[in-house]
Structures are given as C-alpha cells and as structure tokens.
Image (cartoon, rainbow, N blue to C red; front, top):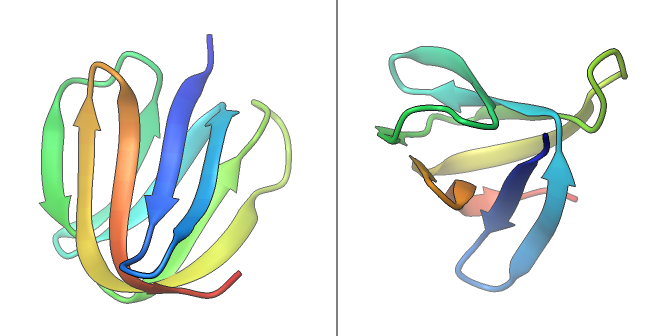
Length: 85
C-alpha cells in the first residue's frame, strides 16, 4: 500500500504523489510516516524531508524551512514555509 504525500508552500504545490514512506524533520525530532499511520500533527523545523518512493530505495531529499505536518486518513501533508526543489 502507498502513502499519499503532498508538500505545499504558500506559493505552490511542490509535490503530490504516492510514496512508500516520508521522514519529516519535526521540532521534537525526526519521524517517519507510512500508510496507515495514526492521525498526528507536528510543527516542522528546518531540515531535509526524505521521501522514499519504494521500500528499499534511496530517498529523495528536499530541504524545507518551518511549517507543519499533518497525518490523517488521506495521507501526509507537509505545509512548509519554504521548500527547495
């Protein structure tokens, strides 16, 4: 099963795709999100968002600055103040 992931900034939708897992730089520490994760909300610190398209694949990293991450029944949405890429 795939996780629906969206990365959004105030200017644009950066990514919207089905992925295996995303590791988010939360303010309380990094956390990984897979399909079926419990509902969750966190603030995000500046750092690299790691997107794993497949279980054993190398991650695509995108530098983000600040914002929020929300996990719900639809998937993971990261609302970043800025994103490179």
